[in-house]
Image (cartoon, rainbow, N blue to C red; front, side, top):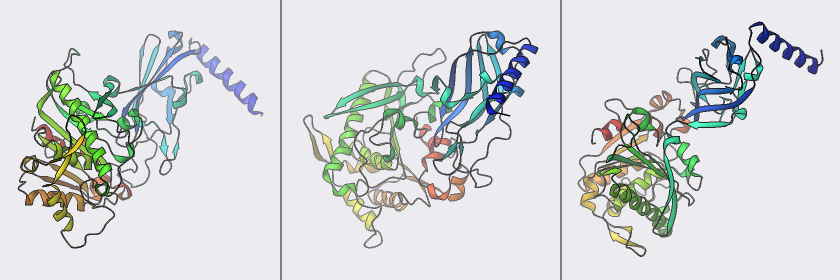
Length: 427
């Protein structure tokens, strides 16, 4: 039978089936995807279809719908170590409101089922009762993103730079902003440098983590428009000056939030991963008296060279950092960035919780060990370290080859002894 005839027969069958149920064929007016930020990509939580005639939705059940290509967004299945398979149970639940049909399902990867790194089989929702209700990502008219859609976006200019930002402010039960809340400012990773704001905001759960957990804390993230500063940036004064200039801009913006009564200036926290972990360290060197605690995650080396170099002798990295922590950092003097002495005493008294994976090959764990040792020599007594094993990461769907992603368990775990709980306990 010719393909054209097959399509005609299928169309007639669908129309007859709908007619037999007293239901006209649907005329779809709009398709909305409701998504959220996942650990390593975007997740689809629900699909909403708006039709012209509500009668076309009459009698539909979950059994009429099937999802294919729907799988977890993790890199591996923790149980098997292989790429996640399609869900055996799609978890489909239907709800109707006039002309709108909402299909909730077990959350699945927006990109579809993984077929290896960065290759996916697209997902599809099919309706056996009416093919007009079939949905793919490409058919969606609008995509909603939980938490991020409610964030404030804008740009801010300071110290000769203009940077875009995204800010989450918590609200009360009546939908009003809660004043004077704690703030966590997140330093983005190098993979998000020189990218658009939404790419940076959806790269990980930095802006949605606290909100999803229901913690009344503001979260701030700036898109860094300059290229990634790369390894051994500390050998290049112009790169270090630019990192510190970006941080000066962020501090100035935070001051506006404090002045407007949006955040509590006595409850400022900073966290970041990879390049952002290194920027977190620079930030604390510039403004140690302004923050209550910091979480450097798998930090890079914008202070002294550590990654992609070998120690000349055991303990060299800690020796170099000990000296650097007693040196200078760039600060804005009202006219330009200029070197100024670090307040070493206040810097080492600032509590830090370092996070790293033991198998991280992108930013080796020697950096966290060396940061902690150097700060300890200078008087730090409150630093902590959380090291994730390959087994720990596997529970979050991360294979050893991407052990660098230690920010995933960091931002997901709110158990009693977790790093995020440590921060919250200081509110």
